[in-house]
Image (cartoon, rainbow, N blue to C red; front, side):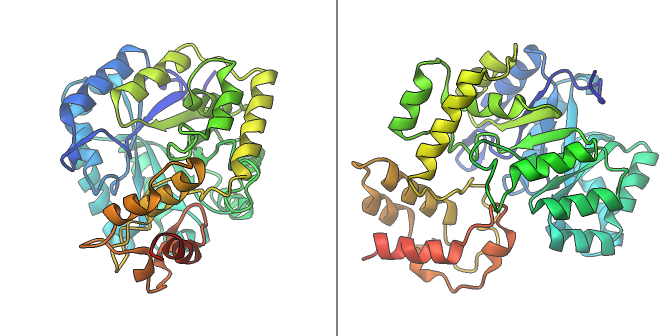
Length: 370
């Protein structure tokens, strides 16, 4: 039985990549997606203050909170480092998040994007202690953390704060043995501390949905979408309390519901097929960017880094892809080119994937601006 019986099933709606129309959340489509999600028996929604330039929380208020009784859904929010500098700023921020979402409490409240540097700040600001106080006051049901760093850092946090109830980690078949992300090692730390696990980025920002043709052929004999193998892979591991998917249109939602409503773990043959897909992708030197866009928020040159990396990847996957034309279309004007990078390093400091962004931008400039 789940440690959290109020949660219906092990599949959650991640609200970092919602349907958009003219740079605003497509309210009509989002409402339809919320309806279908709840009708299928799922009830877990995940957001954060900065998602979609602070548009995610109000979108949930309009599409979910105002339209359904509070007992119908589980809502997770996060305490994000860019929005507070001192302990005194945490509670006003928290109250603003409650107001933005239109609720009186959060079911789960996570210390967001923890790594060695951010954990130091959270400790200095007594952020964890404040979250536990909010739980004691009934404004938070469960306190957890989301994590982007090495396994030893996670082990240290969970040792120092054993009261943490749940851990959200990046986990997918490409990152399972990745030396930067360390999905397997972080998973093992969670199991060591007996913490239920929330999976983020099971489809790695959608990149495991759009596979190279050779990889697609490997999976095609089993049926099902590429995304279905990625999500089912993550959900097949013991201890996975919740697997999130950031769904940006109704088609993605319906596909996910088709295989998660009556979830079946991957078979041995399917696990072997996924391993083969992993070998194919890793042989192509793909930039492992999830398009989370954390890197672009503070870029002084306004460089569309995830877009550039998507063009790089597509140029390697598809021989007929007009990469130079598309690069020129997506950069210039108010948006910087790869060559405009001043190497300030803020993007690399915040990148959850630990990508060498500065060097990758230099390579893109040589490839597309020559």
